[in-house]
Length: 30
Image (tube, rainbow, N blue to C red; front, side, top):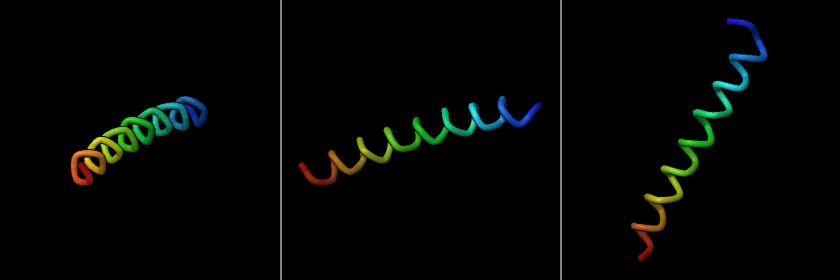
């Protein structure tokens, strides 16, 4: 696995994690 591929994979996972956290926050607030 080269650096650019790892970075893209990490960014994808981070984006999904942020979305998940955002959904959890919305559920908590409402």
